[in-house]
Length: 119
Length: 113
Image (cartoon, rainbow over all chains, first blue to last red; front, side, top):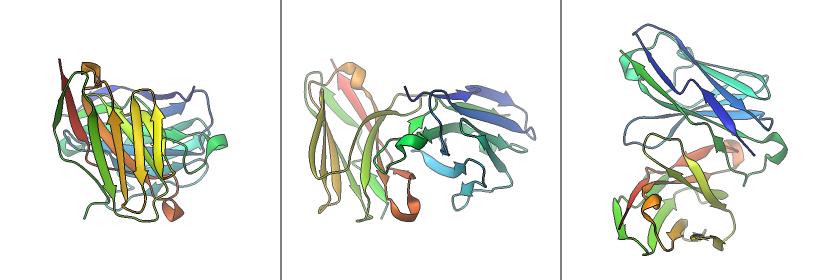
């Protein structure tokens, strides 16, 4: 149980391209999903909290106009990296929490991540 | 001071030994604590979580929490080469940060045969 699917797993594209990453909870509903970014040899950094039916909450220093988040249903959140540049190359990971188990001590379930490479 | 800090590592232990991973956190109001394992190029996978003071055991893994000292640890007994990975400590601070996890920088563990 508690499977989170993330797609695509790997993207290589040219500078200036916009890239959309999908995060789906397959066997549970998630009112909240989280988007992280991880650079090589560094830990996960939370970028934003995606809330179903409302605006995402971005962490300090994350450009909301560059990283567009949409959470239109209880099982799907998308992250769009707009006009991506080489410095946006990173490992992007989403996570989700089960709405019916949304207690403080319940873990987040992670997707497999998307490796984004901008040439 | 970092919000979540792990022993820098890398940590190398022989197969069959006990590996001890440590984590301290700065926010005294933090409420739940998670240990994740991350293999190179993969996303984190949950090992266990703890929210009450004391020990919590699951197979070869034991998590220990001491809220007074703001310290949480993970012990891996009978370490195996397959345990070689980066171990991430994550803290849920609660309050207005409800649901959000803050991660430590990770400790690289190598178990050698």
